[in-house]
Each structure stands twice: as C-alpha cells, then as structure tokens.
Length: 241
Ligand code: ADP
Image 1 (cartoon, rainbow, N blue to C red):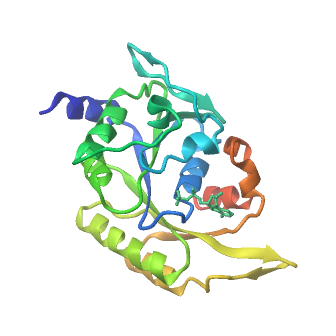
Image 2 (image 1 turned 90 degrees about the vertical axis):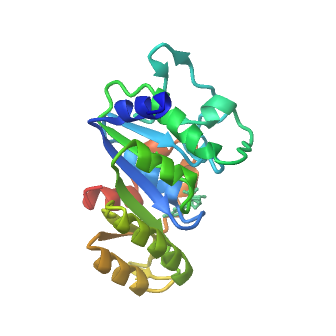
C-alpha cells in the first residue's frame, strides 16, 4: 500500500470522523462544520475544502502558518478546537491543483495532522463529489452530516450525494437544513419554503432533519466562531451532533 495512505489510515484509526458535506457551495457547510467542532472537547476540525477554505477566516487565523514538528503538523489551538487547514500551509492565497492531486493533498493532511489527544475529527469537505470524497473514503470510515438550504435546487443536489453515500455504505447521520427560518416577532418565517423536499429526503434516508435558523448575529462571529453559542449552535447540540 502507498505509505501516505497507510499513514493517513493509521492516524485516523480509533477516532470518530464526522464528514460535513453538501451538494452545493454557499449553503453554510463550513459554518456547520465549525459549530460541530467548537465546545465539544478533544475535537479537531480539518478543513479539506481546499479550493474554498473558510475555516481560517471563521476562526481568525488567516495568514498564520502551521508549525511542522516531528509529530506532524501542529494544529492552531483556537476557540477550543484543534484546527488544521491547507491555508495554514500555503498562506492566504489560492491553490491550483491540476489532475488528481486534490486527493493526494487530502491524504497528506490526514496523514500528517498531529491528532494526539483528539477523539473526534470533524472534516469540512468540498461541496460535491470529487477527489476529496474519494480520498476520504480510502482513508477512514466516516459519519456523513449533509448540509443544504431548503431550496429545491440545493436539496436535489444533496439528494444525489446522499444516494451515492448510501450505495457506498456510509449512511448520512443527519440532514442539516440550514437557513430554514427566521425568528421574528415571536413567530417563524420560512423564506425558502417549509422544506418539504428535505423532510422527505431525510425520511427516505432514515436520517435526522435538523433545522437551523438564519441568525443575523452569525456574521459578526466570523473571526471568533469559537465563541458562538447562538440558536444555530444550540439546535445542533440538541440534535446530538
Ligand atoms: P459553505 O461552506 O457552504 O460555502 P459558509 O459556511 O461559508 O458556506 O456560509 C456562507 C455564508 O452564509 C457565510 O457568510 C455565513 O456566515 C453565512 N451563514 C451560514 N449559515 C448561516 C445561518 N444559519 N444564519 C446566518 N448566516 C449564515
């Protein structure tokens, strides 16, 4: 077996891996991944969304670089989370990876992340079904948490991802319906509809449907997401995620 793959498998062995995934970008996947990691203890957040890295910005570590020691890549310890991101290797710049190298980068990060003391690894996956997903499948068994908005288009695309995961024996644990409603004047407004398509999908999958509100406060936590304990965070906790 290739040594990198073997090392990545060894590194994740015995740890719970929660893979946060979406069909489309911009649905709140990175935000949900961050909220599944903060305040949980012994948790690492690994940003594998290598073309759309958001976690360094969410945690206020843009431009900082990981130190590399003999034990591996040292995480940023921020907001109570051990954070790893390719952004901490290349800096605040874009990355171009021709061919199939995305999978190699994913394997390398998972192989060299120093996960000592970590029981739970939350991975922020790129949207869709590409090389990163195939690489994660090679490395570890994982618990998929799907993220979508209630829009029919977003739900349709995530349903294809869900079908694929079921076929591969990685049944989604939950469908997080992000930006499902806004609390106002004591009631709820559903700007993108009631999420019937998502509810049907979750039922078909036997997965929990977890509705998160649009929280206008959330944007002000960019840079210090580790401090956020607002309604979106509380709903995820309530759902046991
Ligand atoms: P993705 O990872 O799917 O591309 P992000 O997590 O980067 O999406 O979120 C996209 C934008 O939407 C960010 O500006 C984020 O702060 C905002 N956002 C995500 N979820 C919510 C929410 N529940 N309420 C308010 N804003 C949100």
